[in-house]
Length: 235
View 1: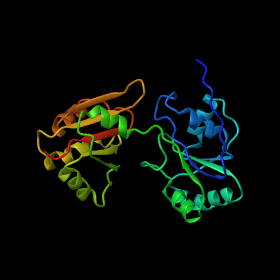
View 2: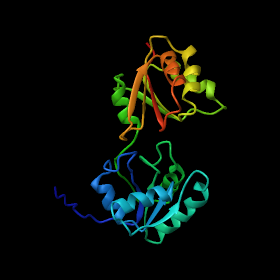
View 3: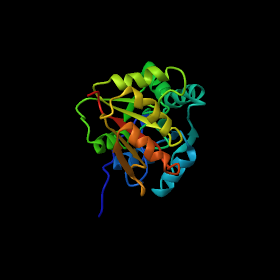
């Protein structure tokens, strides 16, 4: 199979480039073209990005780290690079930039500086998990990661009282705690769907009540992967 990518002119600006969340084939042809034609890439994890570029034999961009700990400092640096005529791409470690990942500051600053912003559609974990849940998808709410301490109770109550399907992310080390805390707040018959390792070899989706799922994970070794939790709307 031979696929030709039609070139198009890329101006100086900020490019939000989605990357695969697991399977490296889950990248668009347009993303590959844009990656190859960037002057710089701001990466949440330069090692992960370098591995992706190597896989597709892309050698041109200069890489530097852009993550939660240096976002404020690097934002001004990126703006200056673009003002000097450079094309700067923003990539997360996996998935779409800004979706529970760094990037808000630089997009806001680019808008304030009248800088061109181009965003590319692509991989994200929340949509496949929503599709696999079997719950209503005409209205849904994405809340990202739950707060660790401050406002956590309000966060859980928001989910419990929502009439819409709700999606949250969680780490494998905190999944049981989340299920045990949400269980008293929702009806027993209200269902939850949990998907992990999306697009990878060990992709898994399990469904049940909060109690059933908590008991399930208590009998298992801590599984790998980031969890996407989809909670049915209030019945």
